[in-house]
Length: 286
Image (cartoon, rainbow, N blue to C red; front, side, top):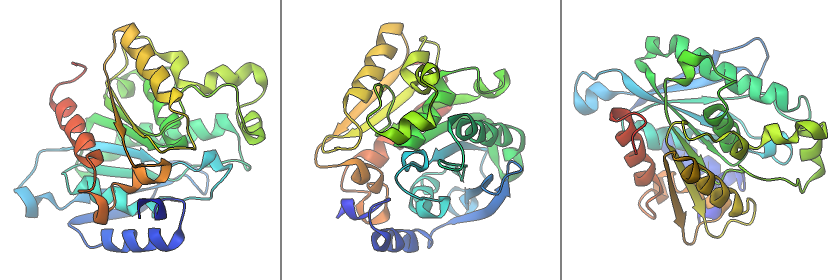
């Protein structure tokens, strides 16, 4: 059933997103973070007063979806309402941006949009009840690569913004995927001398925010080596990394585990929530 979900089956997405719309959150749609048509985001705010009484400012989770940077699927933020539902139900403010993709643009513009998203959030999320000093970056597949680069490569974000990152959550991300196996990747990340800049593993120094790396053992899209390599690099550098592997979940099923019908079928959601809760209150401490 999980394989019917994100990016694989439009009917499955329709069902889980329809279910996700009936929950205790408010969504601010199509907020602009830049000048391009795709520079828009949705901000999901839990109706926390109904759940717990008047809240403090909420931890912010920024979720970047995948789709091969545009090279294999055409996805939008509307496909991932179920992710927002899963995390707002845990009391977090969720931001899901759209961003420019291949073939219209290449990597410099794609990561530029991701950067602008986070900088906008740092500047403005307080207006929506979010805590701009407690930001978590999260992504699935290619979206995890973008979020990982923003977390590991300090050159992308302003110093004050980067210091507000409390952690990174990566679901089935490509972090160490040279040599490229598809021609579109060579185009997206080219020319060849720029290839190393696309690899999150190259920017580990041990001072990065804590990382949570999740991987489905049945994944035949992203090799397990990506998770193993990044985990090993962070540990050897003395950084904080927590890695989980899930039996019976493939590439789509891993993110699909956040959908309402499947939230109790694995520990994916509870592992994510546990990580966010821990580092919301205990910054940069393993």
